[in-house]
Length: 412
Image 1: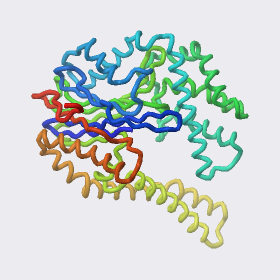
Image 2 (image 1 turned 60 degrees about the vertical axis):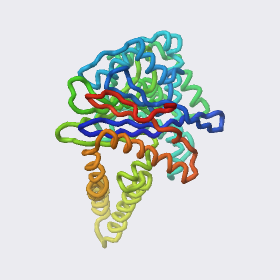
Image 3 (image 1 turned 180 degrees about the horizontal axis):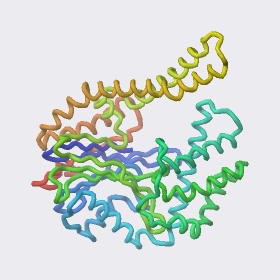
Image 4 (image 1 turned 180 degrees about the vertical axis):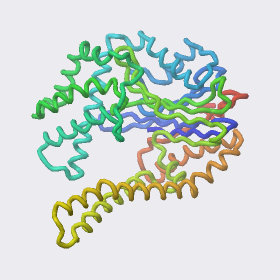
């Protein structure tokens, strides 16, 4: 795991990353504390990049890939920060020696197998949360839910195809990867007597897991921070990257934060940064999620009890009242609760920190980023958890006038 933090204001941007890397050998977890995760994307340019999650792409470590880009491309200054990741991704897609066509199907099978593991984990979750029925029925339900997720966002909007693939790439997959789809689907599900509809959905998933804007597979997060020549204030942009399929890198821009005349300061957290989250918001993220979930369930149960206590009314009317309350009034009440708590967190916890960050000098930004990563290392140590966040903390500060400057670096 990893803890990475970005702290920025109108003067500069600081990036900090721990150095722990987790290796799994059979059932044994090995943690090393020598992984470099923070880099100057190109010598002399005010752009830094950090990675978290999967530490390689088709067996090539991200530090090697970044160094290859630095030396072979040696990019020149670009207008916007977003131009740099576009340049890096184009370079990666051109590295035939690193990502040969002979391995494209193996990479596709790795991606699809990773999605299948998600489906099985989801089916297990359904069982653990009380869904009853035969294993095959629960597995079919998990497949159906994942199939639906690939088609639409949680708010119902259709989920688009990723722009990183050609418009006809689904047909290419259907034609060139049919044998790989059958192989992985058979390996994963041949032991289960799932129905024909579920198998058709698995076929759809085998295509959509590549082209759709959803990442259920193992992924790498890439955080780019700094300046383009046309940008007076710092920007941080986060990409999710997962696989090189057919010579195209599956990726999507997940988040962008821009300092400007309205937003004067920001802090961004990545990967295993729960202690930082708790510090900034006043509550542990898991506890917060649990409280909200319990409140939602309790509100629904209260509605059922209240409606059930009504006197002699028509059963159809009773059911209509119950459904309306569950579908409209409970979500509204829960949302009102979320908003009230969020407003208090913003006022009591987040705004005071951002007010200090806003007026911080470069050295203060660097120390703040380092200390926020250190919080997560401290939590792992003091709670006797596996030290999956730890080791030396690399810190860099980037400004328009001074460019990329190391504040603290492993081995220096």
